[in-house]
Image 1 (cartoon, one colour):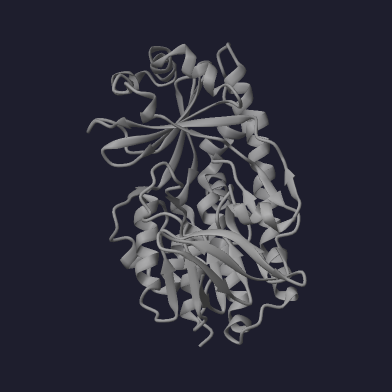
Image 2: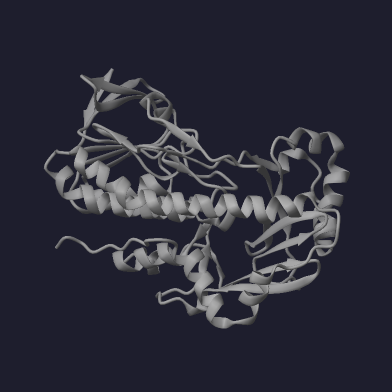
Length: 403
């Protein structure tokens, strides 16, 4: 077994892990980051880069470089209910340098971050390297074992950060307790062709036939079709013609595009989870991002909460890690800083599931827009407030180099 050491080992090369690795390396911390895949090319991952994240990249001096990567701009969010259009969110009213959501393929976002992190000699990214077990000595986590194509390796570090997502194997091994808030929906993701005549605005469609989310990705729509949890196999048994008809009933303008769905391989299932660790850490170990708090796709905020976790963690832990220490008090400080925004966001998502999505999915009658949506659509000042809630979130993080 090969042995390696660092001042911090990070497991998971998603948004949380790469952002944390970059920010720690920028402060001079020795970082080893493990990513089990050979590349970042995985579709239907979170692609929404919110204004809060764009603002952090501006503060880091990285924004212009990031925005050279392919992306589309979402300046407003629209909702169509029973054929009537509403615009409840206007990002143009935000006090940020970029007043929109950048819809960027996650592999582009991660490739950019990885390239920037590799500029630091104290940063090592080990691709095709899968974490396997936590190393524990007298109740303290002192590292992690992993394997690559050649052999097994043991990585020793004062702090191991698990950023390996909602299916985290390290979370299962940690012994830390999970609180499950429940998610009454799952989601099918798919691509549907866009035509030059289509609207450029990302939007959600709601009617008695169900709910469909359309995200503008240039020459195609990235679409999400929520449905009651546990009914995926029933929908598949009904067959693709019935599935295409379901889309056409919700969004008649996509009927022709839906005909291009000829295989279930084109349709990906997301098993929605909403849960969080009651305690994010133990001695020598910290969880962030979806490993700490699995989010619903509602609002598309998962990536941005993960980034915010990473920024706060790097700011709080960086100076101590540079000296080879990760005291429990600082790990607790990370959770104290980020736990409240994660919990409040999850509560809002659960409320959206129960009050909006499930009634819409179960309704066979004509739907009416709720009063709150009508008010948001009518008053511009309210659209600005909703933009802050979605685009900036609760307790947005900022970065200033220690120097």
